[in-house]
Image (cartoon, rainbow, N blue to C red; front, side, top):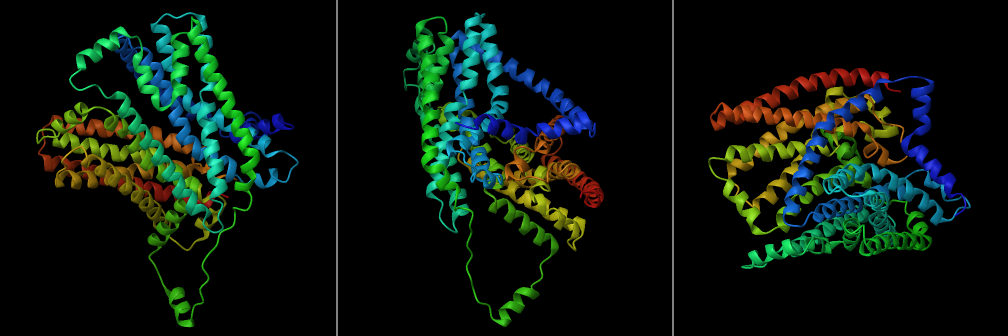
Length: 561
């Protein structure tokens, strides 16, 4: 693959902004506060990460008591690969098909497989940053708690570097074939957005079915089943990993690292990874360019308007807030990357978190149902409202409100609109997405709980009111340092540090909300009074933040060039 090394070097430089970082921080010595803020943000996550490691240590001890400690490895490997497959799809869409520099690369005398391989390695390095924090503590806890030798750690290194290959190669193959056969004139974006959503739904559905099948305990044979677990070491690995066999091979390689069985599992895992990678290369030669070239055109219906109809359209006046709202929603929907990363996460997060509930036995569901009583209803309502706020802190819509404008940002500066109207339109667009999350969560909860009308009303009002301050804080972060000069819409959302900063602030906000709820319950306020007090606090915070956002945005719109 001639030129592969140069392409990889160039993609890494562009992806991580290595030259820009070197020039800005080491040569110009400007904005040195940014790495300091990043380091502080990293330190703020350490207590949560330490708590995660302690949780893993407790889980290891519990599993070891029934001779199934290897399940911890399986959960880490399987979970990592599922995450890589699902979220890798949107990353591949962006890097392979929606990057503007593809127009420069395609005419060059370089094979499509070389271009794709270089981009694949860039995506894989990005995904290492996603998967390392998940898998590393699991491997460390298992190895340290079991006092394993150096060979185990060598196996760990090989498996860590091989983990992303299969899910990312499979998602690349699926994406390339999908793009090849949806490259239909005028309907490209619509078909691809619908297909992408359908693909994620199908994947999550398969996971629910396979995990539910794997975790079923024989009715009336619970004692025999527990005895089997204790007598047959790590038998649960084969049952739980049935949905994705490579996770079984990787787990068995680490468990049996000191014998031939472990070596065979390692060679199988690495060998299949290499085979699927070369299958991806082979497929790319046949379909990559066919899905890429000729798919940039769009069509629109042509309609002749009479003078009366034209006058009516020209004279039609809408409120500025509604105009900004409509524009913002159209940008989100018409750009597949924005749709998948922002609105898509609103759908994926609740569904993904509900998989363990629907794939487990009925005992957990019964426990949840029994908890939903008149004595606990205020707690359940506040928890559900908090989950709506959690979605707001993680969907990145507010944190990219200005970055999504890109090179069209100048329109905000010259448009004859009040800054307050522009901000309210953007806040409303984020709030509408929150309402979508609300419908999904309440709809899903209604399958588990006989939800009362009061619960639906309280969760709706508090969830939306509580989300507005998070949206406003996220917009403050984004207008402070918007990412406007991007050639790939992925950079505006997935490679935007503003999203991470807003998530950290969201965590602090949710901690404050938890303390507020605890205080309200502790002082035994009347239920209605509790809801009114919390709602009032949200409203006051929203008004204060909106005034601060308006003042700061007015200043930044004058400064940003």
